[in-house]
Image 1 (cartoon, rainbow, N blue to C red):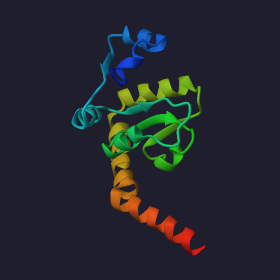
Image 2 (spheres, rainbow, N blue to C red; image 1 turned 90 degrees about the horizontal axis):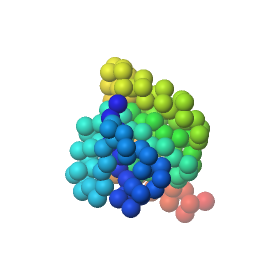
Image 3 (cartoon, rainbow, N blue to C red; image 1 turned 90 degrees about the vertical axis):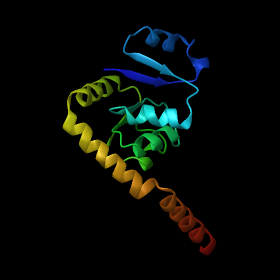
Length: 146
């Protein structure tokens, strides 16, 4: 399993990142252009995003749009941006379950393809600019008419 870590350069000196960086399966990325970031997503097999808290995540939306299966934590608004057809959401601290899920996706091409296709479909139906605009206008309309 190869991990592409997209982490600001200033965080690489943090003790935990320093430990991770010693492994030959880790490639570091920072200061990526939009195109460079998209290329990392497009050549990836899955998207792993451990979170302690989040209302949402642009990285999660971008990975979903690129058709990646998602492994992350069930925190904040994350369930609103995912679906069980492509995402596995774990409680914070559930390391063993996340490791098992990573290993399963590393070995199961069919699972990766099915979840990836579901992620892309979800993004097109629920996260596109036209759909986001429609939902936003719907909220404004409701607020103004109530």
